[in-house]
Image (cartoon, rainbow, N blue to C red; front, top):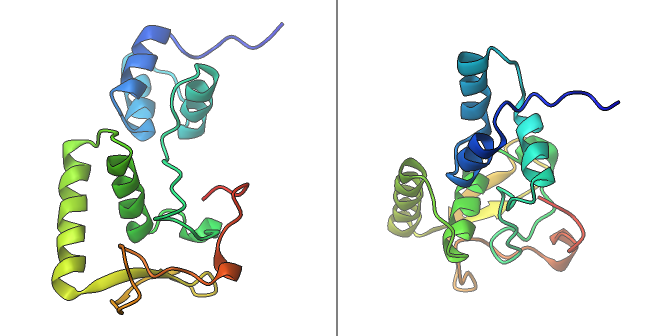
Length: 152
């Protein structure tokens, strides 16, 4: 017999995910409301099993690199994900939209683009824009691009 689900109200949990609540918010809410311990991974699995859209937007134009695990939550990468969501017509939380707007303004005012070097501790860097830079990022060499099968 399969283990009993920790989800007390599927409709409520689906609504929270569809509203864009962070998994950490859902974890805390479940602890407060139901005295049940869950993890962000639990909610990612729930989202997948319910057939809900994935949280992270895959955009190889803005995120063309095979990003190492230790760099996956770098602020610049998070901002690129937010921009990818916007470009796909998906909503952002007001706080995230504000952060993205400030970040893009900073890049524009300083004439910078984002560069990724997987072989460094920080991974992502804001570097001076060059004439070849057409978007928010410095295009990687073909050998640095991720294959379509890889996830960021």
